[in-house]
Structure formats: C-alpha cells, structure tokens
Length: 235
Image (cartoon, rainbow, N blue to C red; front, side, top):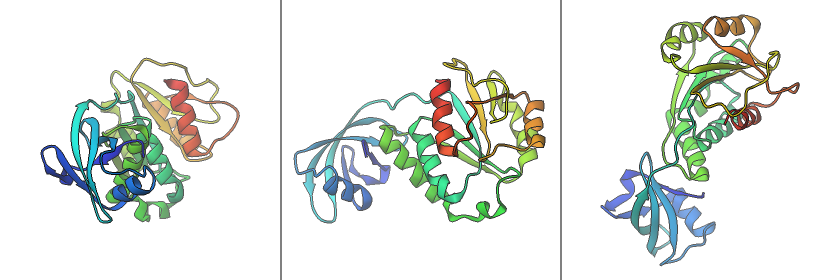
C-alpha cells in the first residue's frame, strides 16, 4: 500500500479522518506507524496528499489530512477484455487499475466458459476492492469504470462502434501478422482475448468494426502478463 486510500465516509471532520479494518491493519503492521508519523494518502476519486497520525489504537487510527495534489493522469486507453478465469480476474483488474486504465469492458467470447459469469468475483463489491488494491499500489485514486457484457455480438457491433471515433482500435491476437506498435500517441481501444485468443469469427467481427490485428511476438502469454506487456509496448 503505497497510498492510504480514504473513503469519503472516513472523514469525521473536513480535515480529519478515522480508519479501521484493512487500512488500520496495514498502517500498524506494514508501515509500523506511530502517532506523529506522516503517510501518503488520497481520497477515492479525489486528490492526494499527506495524513499525519493523531492517534492510533487497536480499533482505529485518526489522521489529520491535507490534500494538495491531483491524481496521476490516466492512460488514453479503453480496455476490452474477454472475461478471464475467476482466479485470474482479481489480479488483472488490480493490474489494470494500477496502470491507469480508467475504462474496462469485460466481454464474453467463445473460449470464455459460461460458469465464469456466475463467479462472485464479478460482484460490484469485489471489482471495486480489486481496483482499490491496484490504486493503492500505484498511488492513484480514480476508480476505473468496469462494464460487463455477456453477449459478444451486440456489444461489438452495436454498443462499441459509436465510441471508436477518433481512436485507434487494436486487437491483440497471437496469430496476427503485424507487430504491436510502440510509443503510440493516439487514444487507444485495445481488445484482448482469452488465453489462446479470439476464434476466427470473433476476429472477423472486430475487423469489420475497424480493429487492426497486432501481436506481441510468437509466445502466447497469460492474460495479466499480456496486459502489462501490451501497455508497456504501447506507451
């Protein structure tokens, strides 16, 4: 936790906050902070600054808060991601949030098992928690917008096209012939398939919507590894 992320509900006065639970545990056990220590803090979807510990006990910590810095700029990237396996989903959402991806569309695909959509890891509460873990790691405060799309074709053919204007649409596909571009300055819409990639029919649908197929190299990577490699290459 490189940033102690506060909820608006933590504030007991304009410049004073009270924390319990996981945040308190981290401050006590990881930071090993004491009264008078100052930690980097931020408010969810708000500014960043410093929090000075006024009191710390077994059940709560109270801090005086000074917020004076805007959060980091987001990546100019919208991520369209075939729903990963539930155990991979948490890591992927946290990683995406830590990299500054502010828009994430989780979509269906032929290689996505139907059971994935029933996972409790898709709950709003869990997706928010994983996003917060990523933000705390990166020193950011702005939660990504995460949308769920259980039907592939209506999303790609009907909902997605109006949002593509003025953006470069790329489909990361392990069997593409073109290499992923480097140091792109455009706003990007990036589609990433399941491990093994989208099937031919899905690739064709993206192509018809204006997506260009690109690849990182000859290796097929795990989703969270591929995402980090793709973002590193693009920006």
